[in-house]
Length: 354
Image 1 (cartoon, rainbow, N blue to C red):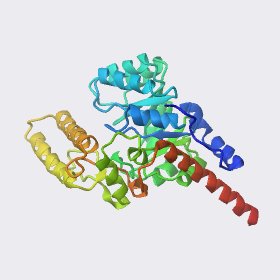
Image 2 (cartoon, rainbow, N blue to C red):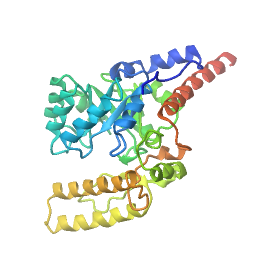
Image 3 (spheres, rainbow, N blue to C red):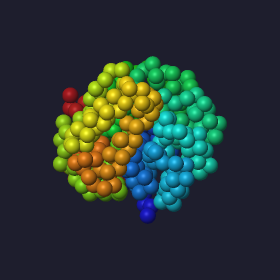
Image 4 (cartoon, helix red, strand yellow):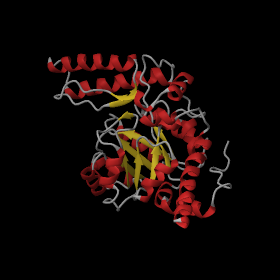
């Protein structure tokens, strides 16, 4: 079912057009009504949630994760059957079939491909652009943002450590101050710990083109995640979403932010066992890292699909503390827009009365 996206009939018109102008670079790039992207979450960001975000005026993104090309093709086609609005696909750069996955996206006319989970190769970026699609890449540092733009990235996402899932070491507030005043060549989207429209507004005013949110959408009505998974989000406080600890400097493991549970403890044991295997030269570094990735994929699936929120991985950002109820995607997006518009109205009144 498709209906008109963000209902803004009840909002201040001047403030609305100011917001539209602030994120116009983002909406033009994405082709969406509002510059709000859905964060790509494995097992969660599939056709139902992605089409709901796009139909509500945002920009949904399919999480390819560990899917093979045939599975991804079915997911894209399934999403296209549920929305005529634009959406993107997130591909993991270390996927062994990355080239074939890119081919699937291009064949099905996906116009935005997000490359995540590592620095993409120049060849992958070129392949996507030659195929007529735009490349979105993650930059956890200014030097990398500049490098990715030189390599041909059409847009950048800067994601703070407050985010859920695999995270970098720096908070969004710091990244935004380092990167937004400097990077002007391409649209920059902010991500990590976002749960309110007025907060998004403050970053737009610093030069961001839009925002990416995951946690709030993972607990939405349209999210196909297990009810146990969503209820865990509603119960959780911000401090419950913790990152895993690296236990050996010689073997770097990207930290993962999730709700603390038995599964978090199991990962520490698993990590220690794999590192010992690596040190005994029973597995290569690549094999060990892939093993750890597979652990997360399995643990996440247990939580999202089976509802095992004690032993599975309940990946969530620190904004989980702001998830108070399970709401429809359309309500979430409308609320974010309303909060941003209301903040602009309040400011105008403050200036008038000062």
